[in-house]
Image 1 (tube, rainbow, N blue to C red):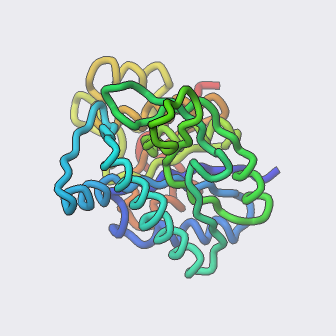
Image 2 (cartoon, rainbow, N blue to C red; image 1 turned 135 degrees about the vertical axis):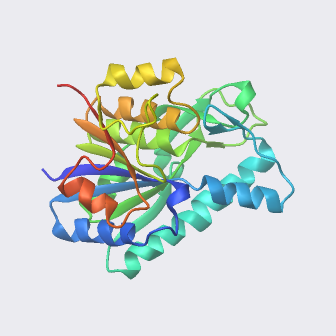
Length: 263
């Protein structure tokens, strides 16, 4: 059975290095790996919110989302960002299909809490659509939105905003991925000493959150890695702005921080 790698492309890496798309197409054509791509788009969302005179607030790396913000998030993620990535892959000869967590009820969710607004907490990942696309030879490119399918009031939207890191981790766990790779704009997890931490066991990674050494956007990434390790053997956080970072991580490994299951 062909092994699956879930790759999360961070919004901060868009346009910084075109070799990521080249790597994705190369890995697909090699045929010994299937890829599922999950993308962010936080910086672009913030830009579009500013254009509309809307402010942005984050709590532990996740965007507080009211109704107006949700509309921008949906348009940017499922529209502009998703289709740009899909177009780039197909233009280089790859085979990709863009979807969101709403399509095929892929990501089923409930409201996380009132403070966060329309931000979802994942209840179930329905992998039917992902499996169909993979079996047909396509790379699913997933925008991190969820279907508000649990305990939704009649006047609430059907779509919820979900952090892309969390979506990547849950998909990796549900689909039985071999590996989860985060492409970010930093070298990996930086320790208290200010130096890169190359390898961590799950309990060590969790301790970094509890101690406050890991903060902001790194928190959902580490949590997602821990979720993925229920099926994957390793999860990596690497600098996706470096040329061919994805290919080097798949072939060589140890490009940034690797969290191993210890199994």
